[in-house]
Length: 439
Image (cartoon, rainbow, N blue to C red; front, side, top):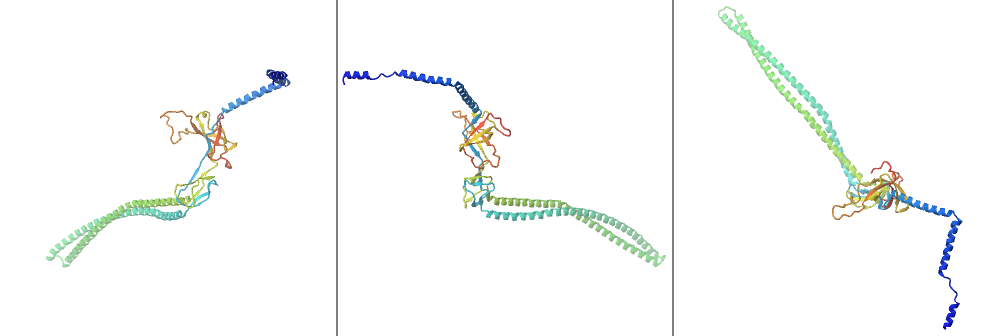
């Protein structure tokens, strides 16, 4: 194309409106509409202002309320886990439950072969009966020996007195015999003298022979009387010696009788020993009965079976773990709060528990206790801040939170809450603690 034609073309193109003119026109139209809105509705300005105030109040209330609550995600549901172990050894003949099954308190979990323990029970029963018979016999001898001892002592004492009285009587009889001997000797001496005097008179024929014979007869009789009285004296003396020997024998018997109380004590001691043997036999019988009962292992509480490690036919030893039972009602929350969160926390304050497994549900509870030390102090190797380089770390203290209504029989019957579940507890630290809680 030629330059002339180019110029003609540029002249023919229509003129474009400037951009600045269009922008200002649009701003003017928007301002007009804004002014038109507030002009058309004068209350709109107050509504917008009121909404802004409400938003500020809501934000302020949320900020103030958040200062009255403390929460942590370092928390879990905790609970008792009952280990089931064997108390006696033997072969397992039955296992009634498996992992995950629900059991009631008293249900038979494991049965150990009871044959050997029944035999031991029968033997212990026989030993106890034998010991009981020995005890009864020994105890029956005690009153018999006691009465016999008293009777023997009394009899021996009476015999001593009687023997002493016999000695006294024999001595008196001996004295009487001695007097009679003296009397007889005096009479015989007189009569013998008369015989000699009559003999002289007879030789002189002054008396008759008959008178002399009478004197001789009288003297002979007197001499015989002396001999008889002396014999009686010897008998009386012998009787005294016999009575004295009887006294010695009676005293010996009395001394022997004094030993009988010691014999009674020995009999009592044997009876006590027999009774002690009976008690030992009774204890052995009770232990045998317990061992037989221990062959039947039952559930201590209602719960879920876990960690089963026992099988039928297995030989177990005393103390060996067989399984575990987890009760679903004996649960609580162990929340490890930072030490900076415990300034206002006290036992009895209400808490709300959210379980990670059930995001749409909440459980109510309350703080029961605050741990006595930080978790680091309970660890196997607690830190020693006095050695090495010290780095300050915010510590955590375990706080126990119990569920409200956990004492009711139907608590957690659905089995929703299990030990070990992660939870997020929120504790209202501004609330007044309820009574009955111990820190």
